[in-house]
Image: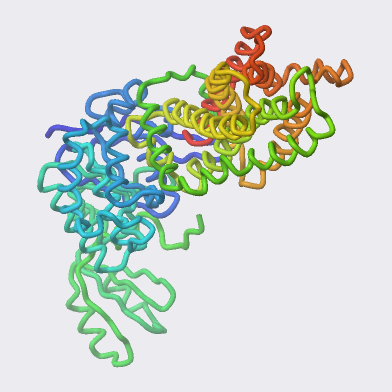
Length: 301
Length: 261
């Protein structure tokens, strides 16, 4: 498969800490590739390295077969970026934001307006074209930022936590738009700590923590590799877990207990007889993989 | 590890897109901008020029109003570029994240700051033209030679834009700019010959003042407004140019250090 980004042994050291340690990956063209990890895992640093906005301390990175150290401008010309925090220009209207951004890419004037009209339509913002950006809702701002990232017709779009802070309706709209983009053949690279987002959007992902890649693969592969396929969550006080432990692998977080197993039947039968317990039977998902790989303790970074 | 990128900046045409962005914003806020451009110098010239001028009459062989108007043209170029290079540039650099957005396009910090400096110079020209008009209406301008003050004001704006942007690159917040105003802008405003000829200062102070860029901006502007020959024009232009180039270079290096990490 054709690759669009190749990274070999990337390292990023700051004076007091190491943000990225020996990270290698290949991003296939036309897919959605995700970096999944808790806050402080090094996801954003990798995206900044990818754009030439943070020089790597070690390793090699090629985007479109160009070296990031020599050709960052040419690489950025072909990339669209949706940053973690909206940085729309508050002095301008929706349309003006796109016009100004187009000028940074030196897009020919006669092309700009038709391109902008299409993008406004794509982002469902045609009606708000003349609104000031600070009058837009969070979801609209995000959609405008995504539209802005497409102004140069990029081959690769990089999204740093694209739906953080949005309400559920807005998130679903963004997901639909991103799927639409990928179906058109645009390569997407995104960071997220939402498992649902990673599972819905990503064809392939890497799980990161403390600057390291812990594993990579498709969501289904990762689940298969790291956790048992069936999960039974038990809520409430468990006085004696010894009989349950014989039927599954069990993990505890506060008053919740997660039982992982290949064969849930015996455990379900066992729990059926204990009437004071609330339990839920579900297939294993990425969140289980994530918690297993990155641990369950609280992150305060 | 925390290496500083000392690479010489490259100035490209794309700097003009930043200049263009700023002029579009300025156009939206043109009302207050014009009041500011005309109002303040008019007050200086009317208040000090006529008030003080009544007692002083002539200074350095010209009417005090002319003397003062030429000084104010130069000093306003300084304050205009300094304000823009600090408050506005800092706003775009830090709280508003405008540069962050621009840096994901093909533009570099080299382009952004070249555009910002051009814009600072342009804004200085706007204020310079305003004062020139007020001064001309008050009868303080004596020949068409005064129009040459416009490129001088542009260069003066460029010259002060660099240090101001350096302050933005170093600043932890808006209050930080008070240091620069109190320690650099205000002393130059008072000492560099805006209100009186620097020859009246003690000799040791004269030699200090002569290193400061505003002195050279005033030395160029004053004869142009008064209609007399400019002395040592190459020296003055040279000093302003050197300040411009060093200021731009250091501003780029320090802004890279702040944003490209």
